[in-house]
Amino acid sequence: MDAIVKNFPQSVDSERPSQKEAEDAVRVLLRWAGDDPQREGLLDTPARVAKAYRELFAGYDMNPEDVLGRTFEEVSGYDDIVLVRDIPFFSHCEHHMVPIIGKAHVAYLPNGRVLGLSKIARVVEIFGRRLQTQEAMTAQIANAIDDTLRPRGVAVMIDAEHMCMAMRGVQKQGSSTLTMTFTGAFKADPAEQARFMSLVRGR
Image (cartoon, rainbow, N blue to C red; front, side, top):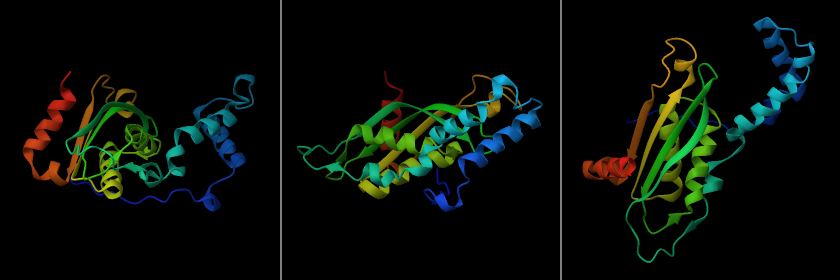
């Protein structure tokens, strides 16, 4: 899959609304939904929502290059596939701002250096905690590892359920979407792609 991936700015605090503006926006939405933001149960909701959004969208304040910057060269000659599978993540659809819930499977072929395994999961977390489409997120993870580590190839597969399909619209609960992308040797060699998919699905 060849996806168009835009380079999103990290955090532009000078353009970011204040905490008060964010809370006022939540009050407007509460009124628009038909409720009263002044009733007891909703008095603290705007502050809670703003705090929750800071956490849910924390990926905008994080740079994957910072996470991937530390690598290890003492690998005793190991140069075969490194795969971290079943990495759980929560993201939000950029079209409706409702959850995307799924798992990512990420592999690379080392080229003299390896990553700490937790760094791979951290990169998934960074891109997950932004407004996303699944296609873009798949490509962003692969490109970040490819650009920083310069391995012989990267493979990423994401399997996720979109609440915009389950909770609204067609309301098809339980359906999942599968996306994948390959770079380098994984893209050039169908046998490597097949091996990656076999390892992901093997139990």
